[in-house]
Amino acid sequence: MEQSTILVAVNDIFFYTKVRDALLPHGYALERIRTQEDVAAKARMGHPAAMVLDMNDPKLNAFQTLEQLQQSMPVLAFANHEETETWKRARELGVTKIVSRNEFSARMRELLEEVIKLESLKVIKS
Image (tube, rainbow, N blue to C red; front, side, top):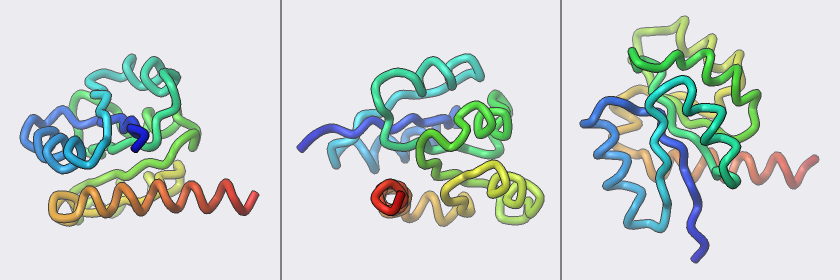
């Protein structure tokens, strides 16, 4: 099985550990993004299959990250469910899927595989 690289823009150690524990056993390689400068540099490395993005990360401007990526890969984002403006703006900037922190925590591998599949279907249709 070929290893798919996932960019992980999650500085919260609790959530990063959950991502790592959910994805590594299933053949995914993780590239952690800790700063805004990491976004462009790591997005150019190889061909990441997707990005996981914490919309509430205080060390990273999630909106700027989405603008930098310009929809170059599928993005699974999560945010507090009551932040409706964050959800709206994320969708406007091209996030593939945004879910609540709880849903992300409970179903992250399934959700990630869904956004990767959605992206591959888009490529096939074009």
